[in-house]
Image (cartoon, rainbow, N blue to C red; front, side, top):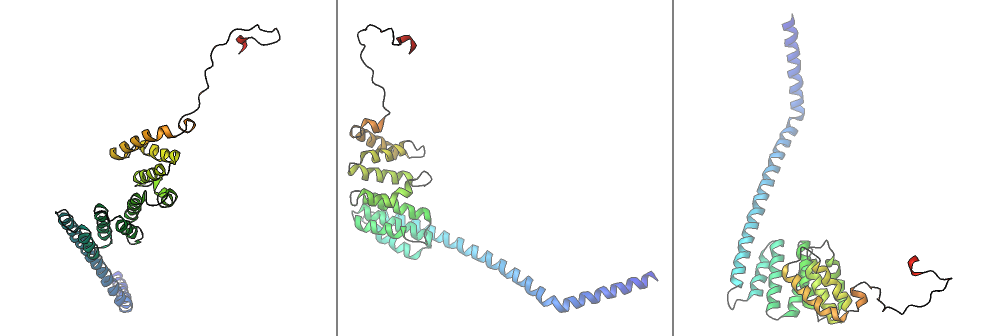
Amino acid sequence: MADIFREVEEDIRRDRLQHLWDKYGIYLIGFVVGIIGLTALIVGWRAYTQSQAEDASKAFATAVAEAAQEGADAPAIFGNLADQSPSGYAALARLRAAGALAEAGEIDQAIAAYDAVAADSAADDILRDLARVKSGTLLVGRTSYDDLAIRLVPLADNSEPWRNPAREALGMAAYAEQKYAQAQSFFQSIVGDQTATPGVRDRAHVMLALIAPRVPATQTAPLEAPVSAPEESAPVSSTEPTGEAQ
């Protein structure tokens, strides 16, 4: 008798499963196929982007080698590379092109090239900030300290990665306009920053030495009480406190 009930239960269970499969089986198959397709798409995209990054890296290294050759048109080489590269390497190539223009003495074009990178929302923030600092450095002596401060003061904060090059440019601009106290503050910030490179720190020390004679003592060191010369002793009045009480 128990076997009969068991067989009945199994038949009912099979009927229910068959009913569920008939009703939802097509959706289950679609779901599995979708998961497989999505996985294949993700794996394929990762492989594609990795391949693109490797190709861009090789192209960048080749461009650097070509630009280093004597007589090479470095701005054109890096400009062409930027047009053919993904956003990250394109920004690097344009930074190199701007640097090559600066080395060639084409300062106005270099500034414009750096500003173009700084304005490119597709580039990484760290590269855009570097472009701002590079452009600001070239603008020292070409624009006012106040204009340069608008560009670079936000990048001179302790939390910014390019703070010391930004401080150096601001310090030089302030020094050129005889704003010695402001210049001194920027160069002292460089000297006090343990992450500053030796070259930047050494230049900051030199500038501080040049600035020191031009800044009033009240702005460079705390005031000390003057030491008066000893006076001749005078009769002590009976109504005045003696020196022992002081």
